[in-house]
Amino acid sequence: LGSNDPAQGVWPHAEAIFKALDHMFCWVFLTELILRVLTFKSSFFVVIFNWIDIVTVAFAVFELYLFPVMNLDFPNLTFVRLLRLLKLVKVLRIVRVMRLFHQLRVLVVAIASSISALTWSILFLTIVQAIAALFMTQVLRDFITDPLQPIATRTQCFHYFGRWSQSMLTMYQITLAPGAWGPIGRLLIF
Image (cartoon, rainbow, N blue to C red; front, side, top):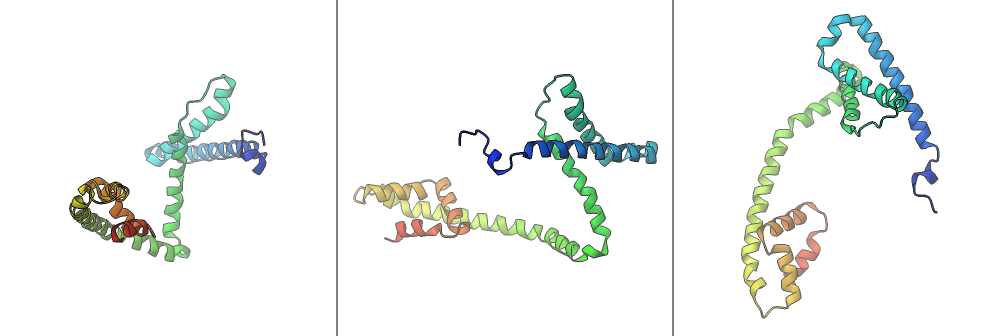
């Protein structure tokens, strides 16, 4: 109570631990980068992934060591931190050639092969839902404009099916969200 930081009660030293880990990984990546440059010499600079490593390590060094000394605020460049994720691609290349990960490779290939079928399925489902949305909007137009029907029911019906865009959203809810058809179906049935 009274604390503006909700994480303080859960893990009070989290910021200090993450800062220490940030320094440790910065030194590890810097050492690795220097060793690779010394090993591969000029051929190191030919590979695009190596340039991503250089930029990532340079920004980490600037952020952790140079900017605090010069009392400069580091701009919020979150995308630079996301470049670190590209290093995982290199790990995935190793996984591809190891026999231990054969089943994983089969699963990944199967998922990648099914993307075109998934795309066509989504397109077909969208077309069917668009046609159903047009149908429901047209069928319920007379009910929505009928002054003899209760205004609350007509308003709810208009909310779900009054325009094609609302009707399309309602059709997506009915199709994809479990249990979403209940209130809408009861409104139309009763």
